[in-house]
Structures are given as structure tokens and as C-alpha cells.
Image (cartoon, rainbow, N blue to C red; front, side, top):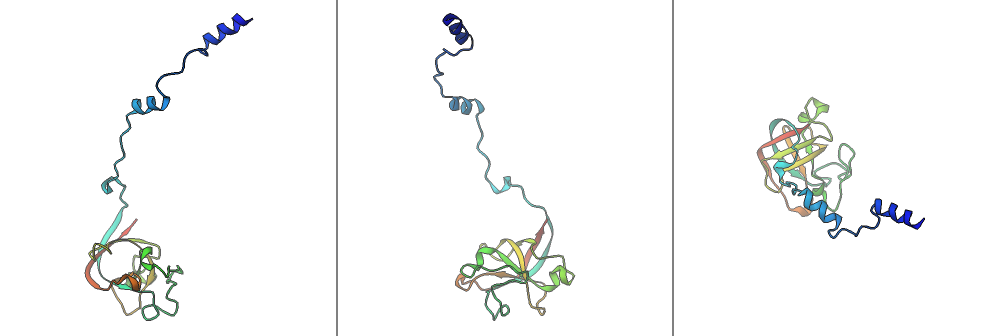
Length: 160
């Protein structure tokens, strides 16, 4: 009976010694994995619509530059009082907004270029501007950010 069990154990390689190379080393050396390309060009780029040329300015969430509820945007989003700039939110003039016949809606992502290295980039539309303002975007920043300015010939493109 014992000889039958030994024969079966040998048949199914139960008595073979452990491999000298760990299994993980064999996998890594046989696969030869390539490091992923982390460059921006390698990332999938969202499709954009045509660019528009607008002017741009910055605004602070204070009653003098907003309304009586400076930390609540027109779409109901709440602004972080300690760091408003971190949201990367903008207001658009009413002529650009879909509610008044424009092509841009709340929640749309806009690529903004032509302001500055610090302020160019991707923003989300969360607010609208006073009706007297036309063809402009307003970038939300905090008073502590010490950013002021008005820029002409700023390009915006809505991401699809």
C-alpha cells in the first residue's frame, strides 16, 4: 500500500524539489514589461469644439463682486471659502450662456488659453455674470491669491 502511494506521489511530482528561481522573478523576466508613457501627449485628449475669442477677468467671492450670497454660484454650487481658486470654476457672460441663446451651459468644461501660465487651463462653468457684461469669462479666485487683471484675446474651447 505504501509503495502505491509513493508511486502516485512521484507520478504527480509531489516529491520534486522547489524551483530555485522564485515564480515572480520568472514572470517579470519573461514578460519584459515596458514602462508606461506618462507624457501629456500620450494621454487621450478630449475633443473640443471651435474656439471663441473673449476677454477675461478675475472675481472674488465677495458681495461687491457677486450678490448677497457670494459663496453660492448661479448653478447652486458652494465655493470653498478658504481656497476658492482650487475649484477652477468660471462665470460666463450671459450672451455666451445657453439660457440666453449662447452655446455654453452650467457644468461645461472650457479650455482657457491666453491669460497666463498660472491661469490658463481647464475650467468648469458654474456662474454667470451681470447682464451688462458681454463676451467675457470671469475666473474665480480668492482675495488671498493676489490675482488681478483683465485680458483681451483669450481663447476658450468647450470640451465635448
